[in-house]
Length: 443
Ligand SMILES: [Zn+2]
Image (cartoon, rainbow, N blue to C red; front, side, top):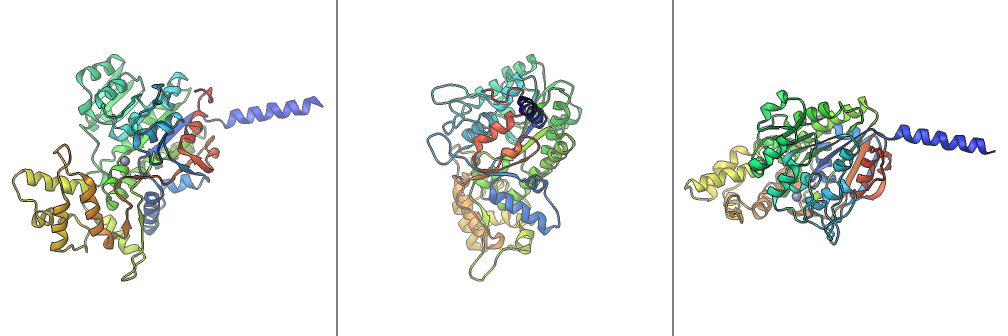
């Protein structure tokens, strides 16, 4: 009588072991919420295309994930990434650290201790809260020089992104002392030496996809996969498409669509890898909703959004921040910031068929105010004004230029990701990623 049940236990244990992934990949696109995802899906369908993200969704492992951090309802990037990485809710602006000062070990640290290869690539700066919460522990996210020091000492195998200006010579020396080759330009990616890599590929974030796409996220992702997959014990890779959020802060719908395209091209590489290596768990999520955006219908005259608006979204020629930066540059060079200057910069960048009036350009000129650091325009007032002017043409609406408490998608394919179902918190993603560790319950 005992034998069958023992056999059943042994069989189920063997099945459980077989279903555990060896590798875990997290595609964390800041601000890739339901609205941004729908915009990209609709655009692909209008072009007769299918997103890699749609293939991953089709696996059917999808959860509605809440994102509230410790002590608030709306999450910022650091706490959001801390939750996904470490499985614990921390206070906003903290990086993988509890209020009592305890460090929350993240997925990359745990994988490193487990003998796996580890890596992170980002289109943002490595020291920005969103990737940094996977790489450092800080009570507050602001001191990016100290974050850079921690990143340089972290010992991960492949770290690629921007943020060079925060890595002092001592941090670069520290990374080299730890055995990493330090790259300073994206041209070096394809001829990077063997061994560990720290790529500081721009001073701040990498350029937006709309302003000069060099395939950088795909190239970084491909290199990371090649390097990390050599470890017979497996690997954990975080791919952070950071700038969907940044452009959502600017309420730049066309820029978001281009950034979603870049994200999807990286997702295609990850999907293909997961298909070719069925011992891989691939999870897609975000650290928060940004902007509360979505296509909307217009009442008078009635318009319900369609091919015309989608074509316009694809026709914008520069990101909104790039346009604002150019206006600022010309203002600093001595030109008067008025409707004429704004028209001269903005009109050639608009999608064909969009015409704004003199009054529109004057209103936009007035909304452009100098930011607190004096170096750039604050995005909120001007971004809101510009998106209001473009709304009749794009039929995209935004709640605001900040984050919202809205739930976000968490979805994946591969072993372990079947746990992504129903109503979860995005901190639960950490548990899915940990199934790839040899001691998954390890805290
Ligand atoms: Zn944000």
